[in-house]
Image (cartoon, rainbow, N blue to C red; front, side, top):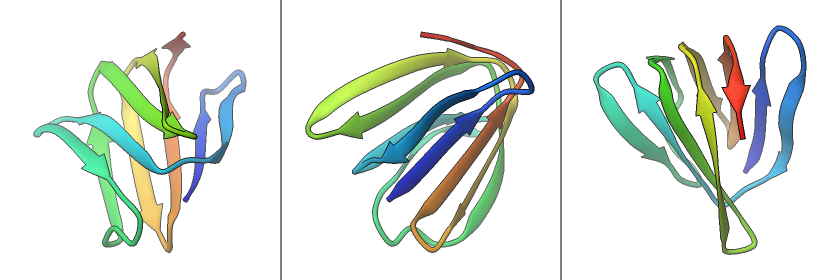
Length: 81
C-alpha cells in the first residue's frame, strides 16, 4: 500500500507499507491491504506504520485520513517522531 503522511509544513513520510494504525476520533483502527474506501477524522495520538516488518510510530495532532485503492493519505496539523 502507498502511504503519505503530510502536515502543512512538510511531507513526513511517503512510501510503501504493509499496515497503518491511526487514532480515529471514534477509536484507533488498522488499515490493511484492500481496505474499503474510507474518510475519517483523527484525534491527537500515534500513527503506526510497518515497512519491511519494522514498525515506526509518529505522534500527531488532529487531522484526517483517506483510504482508496490501497492508497492512504493522512493529513495532520503536526507530527513528532
